[in-house]
Image 1 (spheres, rainbow, N blue to C red):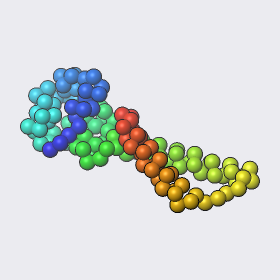
Image 2 (cartoon, rainbow, N blue to C red):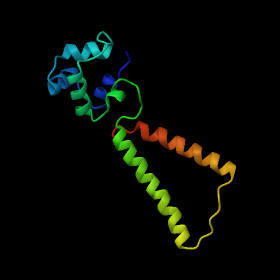
Image 3 (spheres, rainbow, N blue to C red):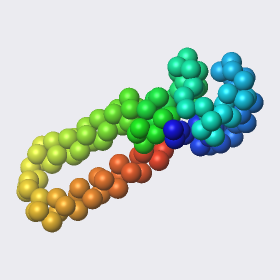
Image 4 (cartoon, helix red, strand yellow):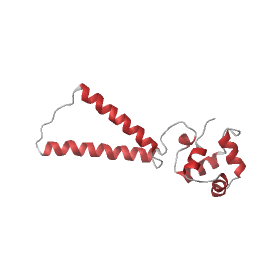
Amino acid sequence: MKNRLCEIRNGCNLYQEQLAQAIGCSQQLISNYETGKLRRLPVDFEEKICDYFNCSIDYLRCRTNIRNEERYSKTLKKIELIIEDFYSNNRENNKSQQDLSDEELVNFQEILSHFKDILQKFPKL
């Protein structure tokens, strides 16, 4: 079973021993999980790891690339509000509103997709 523990731990410059001490388990348990010798940690340790690194169990188990769904959703909501504000300001300032062409929509979708990929790489999201 693939997991991200080694990646997350190394990204925080932590040794296995340091993480084991922080969550109250053995270094061997961490090592066995990272190398795949142990398919799954006991749920209480998985939860402690996720709490420690502020990530979801799905992220730890490589089921998603979004580290923290709640923060990611909040970020997307902020972006949505910025876009809504932009359009409402245009209406208030009597600027002409024009629908985007099909080509412009495709370009905009590509930009959003690229932006989403970038957001997923941020360790705090």
